[in-house]
Length: 253
Length: 214
Image (cartoon, rainbow over all chains, first blue to last red):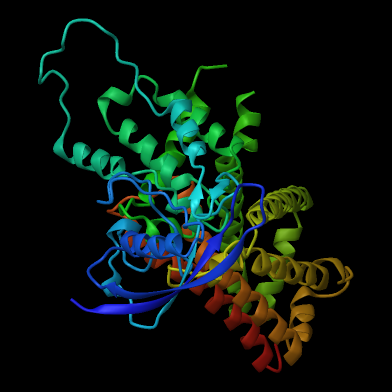
């Protein structure tokens, strides 16, 4: 184990309305075995001792599966490591004396609560618009009555790996939520349980996505490159197909 | 109305771009096929041009269609550009691109507008300006004997190459063509199709520049 000293430039903003600015802090003797969030914990302890308001940041499970954490580290969502959430990013990937710029995920649809904390409830509203299946109550169906090929299961699971962290939106030059929405649509479109609402789902979720202020897809692949779960843009192509099918063959009018 | 919802949605607008873009690519293929006659000889090319224009109704309908395609592609493109700018170009203190080659993608509106300028010059020079008694084979020969005119043409073709190196792939992805079996071919075609246009059209311009008596 070794220790490093760092200079941190962190976006500080007391509340949603206030004007924010970048503040510079230094942290010493950070263990290279610690995670990025643990490094921020060390900073916050120091700031608290000095009587300065600690840096607010989102976090929960700290094992890369909840989707709460995330920030732009030197302009890259979740930092420089591929397919890694911020909490799973370790300080061994930084060098002694490095300057790290930390900013919140930004988007028109993600208002800032405070410092690095953002409001991602717009993503929840996209789910509410159509990311569900109706399950009729009644007798329990026979265990193997719904047959699904293992390939379908794997594809659906790859899409379902999306933790909704919002890195795709934060890294997209247009602030599009296409990778998120496409993953949520794909996981249901690929399984038999999702077929009933299929034609309405894509339309409703895309409508909500547009209404929430997310941008359009320019096919930059930037979202795929920063996604901590490696969600593929092939899901976006599937979303486009689902939307096309739904809007041209649906009967909801 | 479902169709209005389609056209006003973010995906719908991108699909309009994809479909009009595909039509324009197909037009370029036909344009290139006709231009092969330039290499055969000035009489053959003149004959081809006269044959084509001996059906004024067909020419008129095609021009109208092309004009509409260009108008829609450029109009919706500018609308999307303006919508994309809402997010702000420098929303971060540090802006980093993770993907390797974002230049073609991020310059789409600029290469597009450059191509528009080129097309306007091209259409004016070879379709609007020449009078009826002028032979088109002679008009192109005179124009493309000028070094700077050829240079402008090569710049136009280069812009088209850059535009299509993102646009071709983007078009397929937008209409949902993304399949592991074909993705390799698509990645290959994204360079070969624009490269083919670049080589072929540049060859014409350079051929006319270097041959003194066409």
